[in-house]
Image: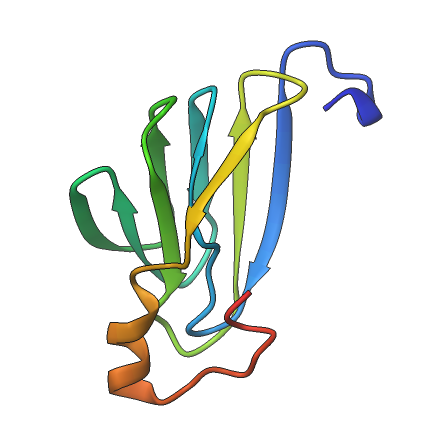
Length: 113
């Protein structure tokens, strides 16, 4: 956020390929996701659900979460944080990937990162 002059927020714009998504992680602040196109499966805390764009998701502070692109095309997702320096703690690999791989095969290594 502060790289662009923001005092109280930051954002990430991602391009996520089919079968791709971040590892399970947690932030010290709440996070808003805006899925612009495509299909995503989320795990937020103990809830797992699939959505179609356009979609907005709330990720509370301190709650483990991740997502995976379950569509057939890359999608763009915007994440917004209520701080200019969100802290991220990685908790492990993306737990949604094994089910995706069992249906579709192994994604290209760039998609799984």
